[in-house]
Length: 404
Image 1 (spheres, one colour):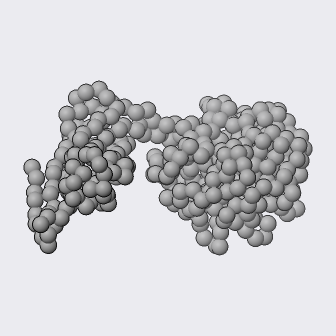
Image 2 (image 1 turned 60 degrees about the vertical axis):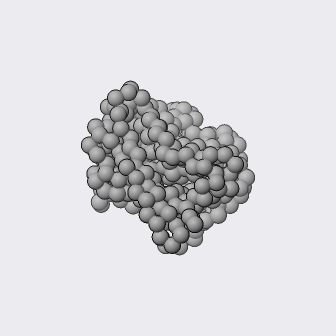
Image 3 (image 1 turned 45 degrees about the vertical axis):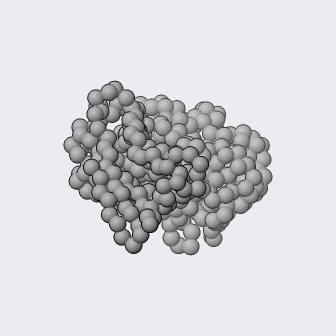
């Protein structure tokens, strides 16, 4: 069914299309919207999603509208829909009359799967502002503060339980950490003696001295490995933007962060890292930056301007969570951030480790309490649409052109 209106030498034609018949066992379904002749004089295309029928059950499906002379793409998540509410998706400003061939606009619905947070085993020590390294099933956390004492305790995680290991030489908090469970690296931090310049190396059983940083600092972020580590940002009485690289023996300075900040988080490798969140100028930051082994450049802003949060993964796929009482996580696909699943509790200043698809965080602080809690994230698996969608999704396509 279509509607055509005329006003001021402009005609607006409307076509209704629907996703329906999800009986086939497939994780995606496409429907052609419209084909436009290059000489039709069409000025713009607007897609309006309406009347979500039968319920999408708040499932994490992604719908992509694409095509046209400029390959316009718009993604949106069906978990944001409510039934029977029109949702204006995008006004496609295109110039199909400049093209030499017909232009096809297509919509595709793709099941993404829903990432799930679940509670893991509690740690032996309650603390915050600690550091972590490793994977979800082979992680390690170290140092921190329990409300009274600076700590040097180390605990290892096997995916189901924690065990105590050798303590670090220095008791401190607000340090950086990276590496693996059997080859971890810590650097910087703070204790009663002030900001720390030392780094330590862990071999899976005990800690030994590593090379000193060029700049003492706390509240910093780190990523990489024990022999190719990276630390950046922090606080030394003022906001800090200095980046340093570690080669397994010594630290060298590299390109500065574009935004000096502390209480930030980071992930990735020494030559492909991300920094995000933090505090600068007295407020939270949502600026994300990307590092190529020499310089930092601006990335896509995060959704929330959190501080003292956690992040794992890398430049092509990352997850961040925690900080400032935020319950939801955020997912990065290499281009932009989207809201992910909610955690079961709020916390900040946790020790974190893992990947973008299998992450874990332990301890932290919330509501006046130092925690022993641990939670884990596992990426969802794409499911067949016929098991997710009970009804249909209707959308209208409007295109506007001049007439004489």
